[in-house]
Length: 366
Image (cartoon, rainbow, N blue to C red; front, top):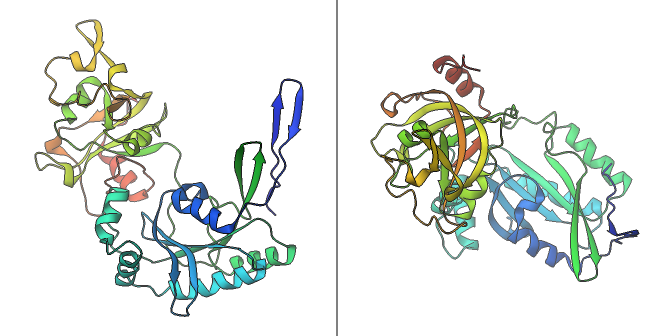
């Protein structure tokens, strides 16, 4: 049973409830989801198409894919009964299950004026396309309400491994301000349906992060080791992912193969975040007993680290790291099967990678 959402406006001693009201149209909600699909709370998704026509002549409201290559069918209730939309979602799941990689490419091109799916996927996630795509999928019904019997149907089929969930949006209006409140029938962060056979991501331990330290004129591994930081920047998405590195998090620094200036790639260091990321003009280091801005530090290998330093949206962002153990790039650790990702920051949850890194790196200072 989803939690009933309530919102109150507090003005001094006055407390007024903001009343829910119907959103002007389901199409508007679909437009919002298309533009800001992250409000679904399912992590980063990449939209394959909107109003995707199936072989049965029906239209999927939104079809998306995540970084692991799993598909997401997102279906709005519209003017159908909850039971009807659940049945429709199950039919879509039957169709989506057999989509090949080539089918997905063709669907994306059809809905994006012929654009190449592979290039768009790599650009969006900053990661290579997984070797296996569509090994599992998720069905998501978006509704403003659901009757008890339909809720029981969803719970029942989930118990038999059907990957379906219901997301409720409450629309609230407060004068000239509008709000969308979100709640789930079943917490999506919990384990997937018990009968499912698709791949599951291992749980994250809440601490370990993969951090790509690709080398260029803007950043260099030697500088990071010497002055204690990891960095990324020159774009909003890079700045935002750097903000995920919280104080106390453990980072495993890796030079990606695609960004290895010298040809050496793999894991090169492990450390703790001791200060959250800041713009480069706010990051200082100690030189000869004095604190100076990183750009004034001597012998920086990254000769263009200060590019766009005056622009808080585009400059390099640095998170301060207390290194536990580091390796020269020439001794970078890499084995087949290790976690490889070209995202700047990613949660490191793969047991094999963590086990091998714990064997290779000296964590005794902890």
